[in-house]
Length: 349
Ligand code: 5AD
Ligand code: FES
Image 1 (tube, rainbow, N blue to C red):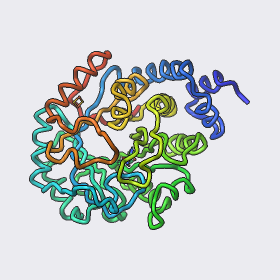
Image 2: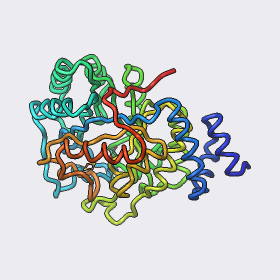
Image 3: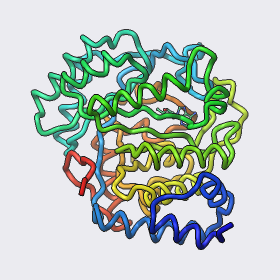
Image 4: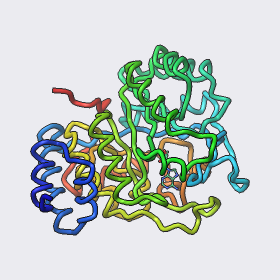
């Protein structure tokens, strides 16, 4: 068995560990090891992206969802959730104001709301692309058919975010209701890749029943699938879900994993997530220092922000987009990085 120092060395020079080695590295979390990984990850990120941080304008299009993921605050069984859906005109207005603020990527994210048929999404995508041809459109609208993914890609969508949630089938079953399946999740990711999207996967850190074994599987999956993006954030319980009394995931471990993922695939686009900023007031800064290079400020109208509550106490729900961007610019500058006006595509060799 390798010592932790040797594992870190091996990871940094080869971008790969055995599954049991990932598990050991996670188990051996310490501030000193976190510091070592962070230094290596920061150097690798700087070689490729310098000190530039990409921003994505997040538009939370609907909190209506046909799914019932156990951890999620907008699951269909939550009767206390005040449901809303933005109109196509409202979505376009968010994109317009985002463009003025310097955003060149718009992320449409929502629950699996039957209103957003292929026809509806196609027309919104086409309209955004015709008004802002220099922008990327990212979708984060859940599981759909291969045909649907193809149509949306043909309409102009560039990227798709679909967190795999966990790379263990057994663990997947504990976080989701019977009718959802690990196989379908993976089918979606593979087909998005095949169609030509830039694809983002991801998982929660510290979700119920997760141990270092499950996290090691997530890391191995990332190593093998090589997604263009990977969103990870701590699990945060939501008061109206069956997981209300579960413990939250840790910001420190999330940062540790961000560094590891940066070392696995140095070019990857890694957001410092809102969940990380919620778990720790300085979480997004710590995430960037650990190796993240993307931030996704909210462009949704302030009137709906509080309603898109996947977990309790989500930050930035009272701020206008412009305020949030200014706040973030300050925060990012203070730690020595800079937000750029750029589509922020993955930088290939
Ligand atoms: N805590 C943290 N993250 C969550 N997500 C959903 N519910 C929670 C929660 N309670 C994440 C999931 C989903 C993404 C949009 O938000 O990973 O894919
Ligand atoms: Fe939203 Fe600071 S980042 S208010």
